Length: 218
Image 1 (cartoon, rainbow, N blue to C red):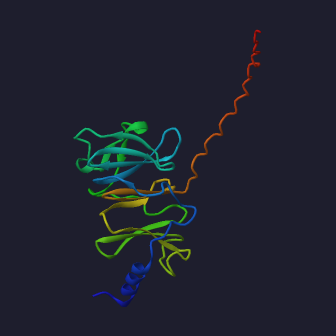
Image 2 (cartoon, one colour):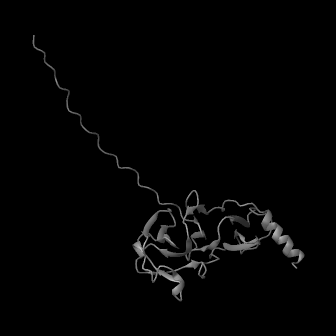
Image 3 (cartoon, rainbow, N blue to C red):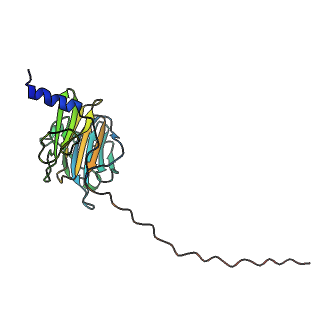
């Protein structure tokens, strides 16, 4: 039997509509990235750009995404069977790929593990299940108190998993990326601005050859 307080809290979560994450968070892509058979995810850092990277482990292999641009920068459809899933490793790691090849990446998902649930700036992520097995991901500011109305400046219901099993949800170690992974897709938010593309270089005007003179005899 639940208490009156617990019942009110449950009703508060159920009544809260799913909304966009507040500023400065922005979605990395316009929609969720479908990844069938997703098992888990882990974070790394690009050695050149410094961007957060998200490694995805699935039944179809490994993938690596730039968490600022959303670009898929590496793919391995046939990883080594001995390290293709993290369940045989005591730290739940898988070897990195692409620019982080050979670097062990800790994962969180079906086999266990977890991602950061807080950032130094006070952002907090919680997963609640008032209607289990459907999970809701709650983002909050200022220490994680879910008081007041949803979206009123303290907490936001940013993801509702009604169609797939939640695998992992949390922040990158830098606190700049927020990821939610289910058994079928990946959703990312970032606090970093996308890199600005360089303006196209202006080419000097081409000199046109002088018009040919036409001569007619007769």
